[in-house]
Image 1 (cartoon, rainbow, N blue to C red):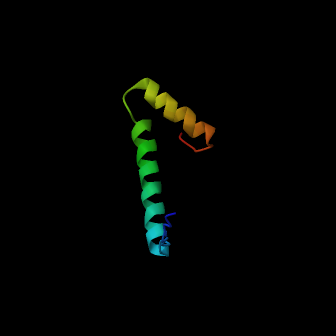
Image 2: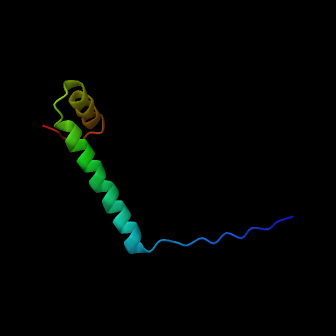
Length: 58
């Protein structure tokens, strides 16, 4: 029988804060980029999503 040991490391608070900030920034960039897209179907899908999430868009 083989025994494997696994070591886990917890991320520091600053690393978690950076990850959260990067995720939020990416999310906002995606929402606004798609929201101003030239394609009507892509724009309408983003618009409907914003309304579904109660996110003001106009």
